[in-house]
Length: 134
Image (cartoon, rainbow, N blue to C red; front, side):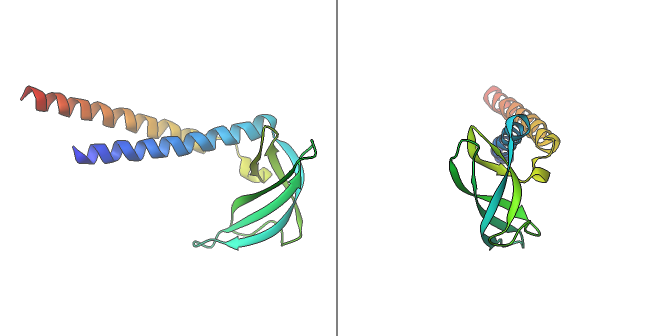
């Protein structure tokens, strides 16, 4: 029974993360604006991936400083320009055009984690019922 609780908790976490990724990507696909960003810092991750700190100006003139990751090979050096897509409603939601994707992977994770959550909660309910009935 403890295993089912762990499975349900893990399913909730995966569902939440994949839903956020799906919604963020959807916003960029639907209303994203392309612009040039300047790389101001590159940090190496523990698994060899790189995280870039970037700056750009929105179409409304708002200056934005945020991070974009992960990159096996950074698309620019410090001081260099490269293209990004940002959400005008939430300008820190930024990806490079090739990172935006079509959302299929995130959608698969949403479906699988939601199904796993439903099954584990159902099995927990059956286990509790069997325990109560004796």
